[in-house]
Image: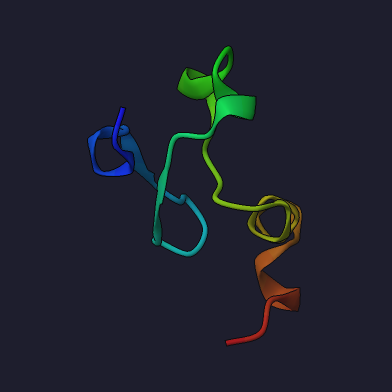
Length: 51
């Protein structure tokens, strides 16, 4: 399968699109964030985030 044919999603935190990865094969429906950094940023209160 070509990389261009892989499914894509948009990150809930930064809005960047990211593609399917083998390590997400079994949990693809649950993946919301493009990286660990975005996942941890999403859990921080809004007041402590930098603009």
